[in-house]
Amino acid sequence: MKKLIAIALLLTTTSLCAQTPTKILKQIEALDWMTEEYPPFNYVDKDGKLQGLTVDILIEVFKKSGVQLTRDDLNVLPWARSYQKLLDTPGTALFSMTYTEERLKHFQFVGPIIPTQVSIIARVAKQLKVADTTDLKTLKIGVIRDDIGDQLVRAFGAEDKNLNINHSAFNMVQMLAKGRLHAIAYAEDIARYQFILAGMDPNEYESVHVLQKSHMGYAFHKSTDPQILEPLSKALEELRAAGVIDSIYARHLKQPMGTK
Image (cartoon, rainbow, N blue to C red):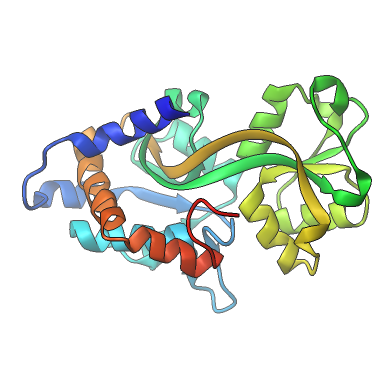
């Protein structure tokens, strides 16, 4: 994982002019910025306004770098659709995305933003043990299509017959609560948040196998000009140094970054 973070930080080491050229700002503003429903990182509230930890950080990055974009310029799409669009269409950006070796082959990143841990999560009372692929054979595991949990649990050895494909994390955790799933493969912070939204007690669920410890970032189409990413990376690192990122993280998750 140190290798992943080192790659992610390469963009932040490039020297920049004191002021971002207008041409670069216009190119950033012309990108098709996409996100999804992934609370508390990014989501639409009851008033129809885009909220979330990574949204707040991105808006601060825009302000810091002089980009004239607001929450209204960010498009909310289903994850599978936006992920495919990012693969296929130049001039696109998607957040928040977990770093993996495979994704670094296909996308460029600005980040890291925040740490994340993706696990197989089950009810404590079930006392599930998952040590290797053989332990998955009798399980039905919920995933979100093309989500990092879906990709990682497949890489771990899960077959299609073991997976229940969902488009809503809220519905997925409800299925887990009702016993229709043995487990889910999902980011722990997001799962905990969804448990609370669904009226479930997070303390009744546990990680039975960690699939990956990583970080999240803002992802861009492979062809994106690195000059476009430089001011965004610089602004992100300056905000981190000033304590702004930690403050936003604590406000949304009610805990210091890196703690449980």
